[in-house]
Image (spheres, rainbow, N blue to C red):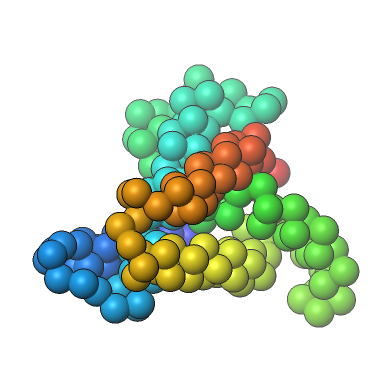
Length: 169
C-alpha cells in the first residue's frame, strides 16, 4: 500500500510543479522551473507504456483477472519503471547482483532493491531534464529538433521496457 502511495504522490508533485511552471506561460522561467517541467514530461511520457501494460499485460501473466481499478492504477504504479525504460533496467540488472554483499541476501526483483533503482532513475531523469532545461532556455522547445528527438527516444526506451514484469515474481 505504501509503495503505491509513494509513487502516486511523487508523480502528482512533479505534475503540479509543471502546472506551476506553466501557469504564466509568457514569463520566462529559470533553469529550475524548466528542470521540474522536464521531470513532469518524463512522467507523462511514461504513462503510455503503463497503459499498454494495463491492457496487454506482461508475457506469461494474464490480465483477464485485472479489475478495472487495477487497470487504471497500473500506469501510475509503473511510471518509475517505465520512465527508466530499458536503459535503467539494463544497468540495474547488470549491477544489482554484485551489490548483494552490501545490502544482504535479497531477491533480484526491483521492489526489493528499490532505493538502488530509484538512484539510477534519478540519474537518468536528471540528465534528460538538464538537457530539456538547457534547450528550453535557448528557444521554444516544440520547434527544437533536439528536444523532440529526446522525447521520441524516451518513448522508444519506455516501450522497449513494457515486457519487464516490475511488479515482482
